[in-house]
Image 1 (cartoon, rainbow, N blue to C red):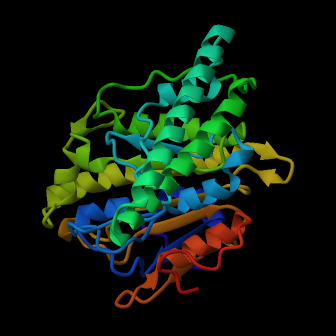
Image 2: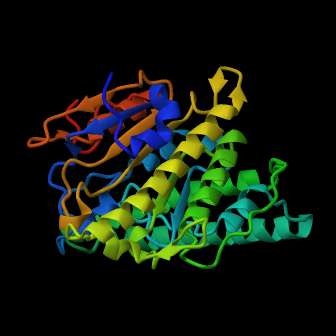
Image 3: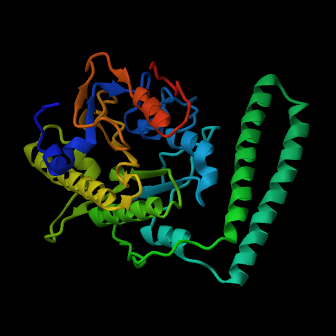
Length: 355
């Protein structure tokens, strides 16, 4: 409990008793350097192989159980990158929303009756198309090999999931959207405004949770495609990806620290904002698990072991550094099982978990 805070953790020291730092965690069999980003929440092994097929992500396990209770089963968000952390039961990537302004419109702006009726027509058309596709794929499965039939079964599972989402969307379309005091954000178009983008997405995530528009959110921070980073004092350094492969160069290490300290400060702001929202049984932070981490332990050498992971809020017994074996890592999915159970799901296993 009395671990020494690193320079990065000093930036969130005010919340020390509300987060846990993990070391010695990684998903077994996950390799491939950058390619492992798609498996951060799935733990599917060997993402770098040509034969790789992903599996369901942690957030979608939660969404499948709880998503019907809110307008949006989940929200998949991204900054400077179209890639996602969210994958369906069939391992299909869920597209991200790339703008805090678009997210605001989606959650809070109510269309007029004409627009609402047009949207209902669109939803019903999509469902009728899916009915046809399901019928055709069922006929096809009778005439193909066992391996192809397995592929068709996975496809049908994805279609059924989409049908369920369309049915839920249709039911919510006629209900009024929540009203908030905050104005729609003016989301930057300059990819170097990385910090401002993160700040706005964090604010929108807090509003989405506060209004119970969803209970599950993922945010992919696209450092690899961020050409540079602007600071409040007007300076700009970059590109972010190149700096992360620093080769022990002192100048690059200094620049990388600046970017990462800025990210930790934004993470601290998010924890503060969640804590300031009072709910009937504690703060929004008390009732929200915030997982923060990366799929690489050392970006300089594309290492996928000893991942940096922080879990905050959610009513856990925090204030600790839980250090596992750095040479023989504990599965990251053990943390995921704890999160699923805290969410009220009776899961005792997820992907490569061992306990």
